[in-house]
Image (cartoon, rainbow, N blue to C red):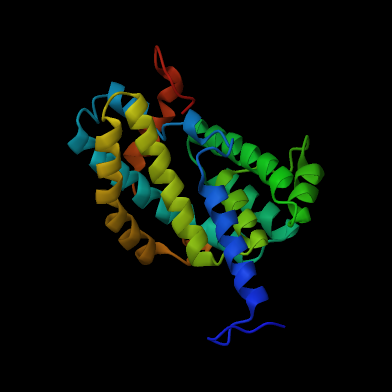
Amino acid sequence: MEIDDKGTDNNERTADHLLQWTQWQLLDSILPTGGFAHSYGLEAAIQARIVSSPQNLKSFIIQVLENTATLLLPFVHCANKSPDIDNYAKLDKLLEATLTNEVGRKASASQGAALLRVAASVFSEAPLLRKIRESFMGSREVSFHHAPVFGLICGLTGFDSGTSQRAYMFITMRDVISAATRLNLVGPLGASVLQHEIAPVAEETVRRWMDRSVEEAFQTAPLLDTVQGCHSYLFSRLFCS
């Protein structure tokens, strides 16, 4: 075993560095998980004139992040802490019963199924992902909701719970801001500035709501939930949700 000047096992350092590559890949927008097909209710909010300017957009994103933290981070956390089939199935069924609007529920299942399909193919070091997908694919036992799938993948690939929850908040923020750019509400440069401005708020939100059990999950923004539920009634739409 090789030890560096600081007394660190070189094999351990290599494993840590490889984990970082996995983290970056999981967060990379090139991973085909279908997240950019959804606006998290933003498209419906624009047509309802709830969001009409970059200022409204910032407030909307912060509310989405707050709602994500209180409602979905518990599922990410619990799936990450116990990444096994039984716990995953239990969390998925509970989230299926918890999500209150059909549009959001279908979007969560669609993104989760796509993420699990990709992860089962890419992260071969976690064979349980393929086993779970093969066990439940085509059945109605689970719906493959996104939050528990994400937590499961993070747990099986070596992410700690704190990193997993921050990562989930990051991809939520990234996808909403991407949707805002494609809806011409903000330009690419403005979107980057906005993301940087919201990051401290997102961190404070994570700190406030992280590491909670699923029994403590709840919604903080019922209006957003209602607006997203109206998405399927829009006369014309760019996004799935």
